[in-house]
Image (cartoon, one colour):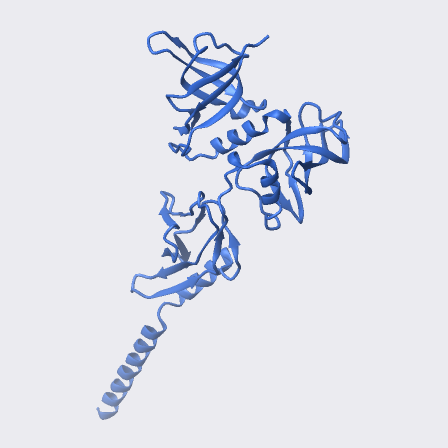
Amino acid sequence: MKKFVALLLALCLSLCVCCVFAEEAGNPDLDNAKLLLREMYKSNKEATTPKDYDVVGGLNIGGVIYPIEWTSDNETVKFVTKDDGMVTVDVDEKNPDETFYTMTATIKDDAGNAVTLEFKPRKVPAALLLDTMTDAEIAVKAYELDQDAAMPVATALKGAVTEINTPFDEKYGNVTVTIAVEGAEDKAIQCYRLKGEGADTVAVGDVIGVAGTIKNYKGTIEFDQGCTIVPADSVKDVRLVYVAYALEENVSKDEARTLTGVVSEINTPFDEKYGNVTVTVVAGGLADNAIQCYRLAGEGADTVAVGDTITVTGTLKNYKGTIEFDAGCTLDAVVKAE
């Protein structure tokens, strides 16, 4: 009987020790989750985040979901949980100055155990207000891009062709050229597989407009594949169009802007009572990036027609997915179509 009691006491003591050890060790799956998260997002590497991006809101380890709480030491960075369980890291894309933030992930289990993973500081570059910048300023900014990084918004530049890198390809309808922008001639911009009207005849010395996404491709600053020729005198308007198309839904530009484009559609005819008309314009020939001018008013609004070139001033907005000048926009000038 004494032996049995002694054995029972030893077993209980052993169980207690195991329980204490388990309590101190926590949940080993948490460590696995931490390792997985570190591998997914390379927490030990610096990163540049010019726009919002998504991270996971939890990890599945052995069939168990371990939720993740994301925090930041910079109050301008917000974390928004989406319906699908992902979390959007909402950075301030309009910050006037370069900022940094350190992100921390806290992974928990049902017992209250937790592990944390801290990420190396991430950089939010100063906002590129491309619609207010000059060609030279944009060229300079392009040369500040990290390798394999791209500007967050497509843009346009006017420049003189300094080199035909690869001749026009009849099969694919493109040519690769290099341009120099006035005021930043030392910041050559390559236009990779450039398409559009005149691509087959472009020559050294020509001044052209190019629209597309600028990136640093392995050290070469270039307009990426898919760039197009636009009229040289339309680059400012094209830049504004791209900025407008980057607006989030139901967000407006902070100040009035002016745009010149060709009327492609009369959405609603001129209203005699209210003295306005709604039309759609296309700048630089970019038909896929048309801008609606909602309730446009001003001298000539009653006779504006498809094909006319008009100049409009107003507040640009993404209204439920429609990119438009909001009500109250004004017609500054009309050049009637021939």
